[in-house]
Amino acid sequence: MADAAAATAVEQFGGLYVVVNNASVSRQRRSEEQTDDDWRLAMDSGLYATRTFMLAALPEPKRAGGGSVTTSAPE
Image 1 (spheres, rainbow, N blue to C red):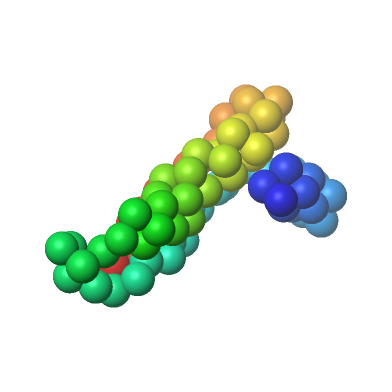
Image 2: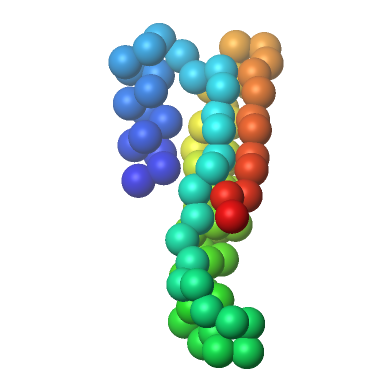
């Protein structure tokens, strides 16, 4: 999915120079009530997805000689 998103951006806009990572899903519970599945969901949709999309997008700005990646963690 990340590779397809990066390819679509390049196709539609002629390049990919900026990546903004700002997505995450979590189940709002007290820490002591969170299950392993809750934690996995947060890590997969936050950290893992951020890394996956950055790696998919990275070849384009490298080819162009530079670009920017911004990562934030939503509350």
